[in-house]
Amino acid sequence: MCGRLTLRASCKDVAELFQLSELPPLEPRYNVAPSQDVLVVRRHPAAWARDAAMLRWGLIPSWATDTSIGSRLINARSETAAEKPAFRRAFRERRCLVPADGFYSWQQQGRRKQPFFIYLKDGHLFAFAGLWESWKGGAGEVIETFTILTTIANDLVRPIHEPMPVILDPQHYDVWLDPAPGDVSVLKPLLQPYPAERMTAVRVGPLVNKPRNEGSQCAQPIAEAPAVPGREQPEGGTGKGQQRLF
Image (cartoon, rainbow, N blue to C red; front, side, top):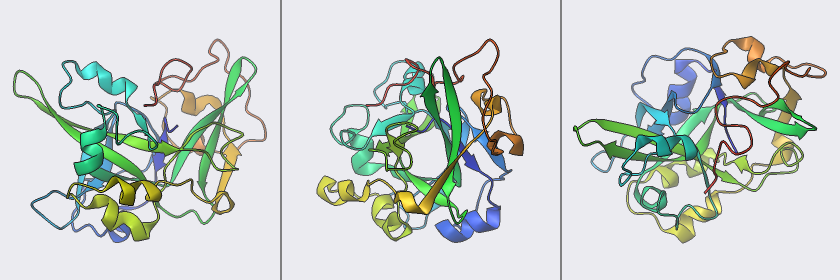
């Protein structure tokens, strides 16, 4: 699963990797959480050029009658997303990239959960595979949202938590972003566990458990994270029973 991510890279680095001519203002983020606006890269049917936009994390299907469903749809299992009602149309027509340079995952240790910060060994920027949707309310308001796809965990992530988010190879960005209805048999093979030997994971402290906490301390490695007095589970949908993976 992916319940937190980081995006500390400069606007220049993001623009270069994702071939973007324009970007919304970005500040380094160390604890991006569900329900927040997050940078995504997509391609609309009317234009070949890539577009960057800030979308709310937590997909709201176009047919939903209540926006609260988004809090339960922050992740989608790549094995079943193409068939699930909440995701199947987006899987075919509205795929996106979610830029990041790390993510957090929680390992169950007795009564508490130990957060780990997971990133590429070379420190490079990368992209999660995402799906986006546009929801229109009865009063005419439009909310654009997204979800991050997950897959089986690799050997590094599996001892911490299963599953893991899908990290796409840059050579597959164009195929994934193509707004034409996608061939599932072509798209699904792209959604594989990222090679464990190219990643690393470090223990971090309890600051990341609360979405309101920000700053480099959230990703600071520690030898052993102490328990959080009075709170054994992280906030914001990463505890047991707070997220559903479809």
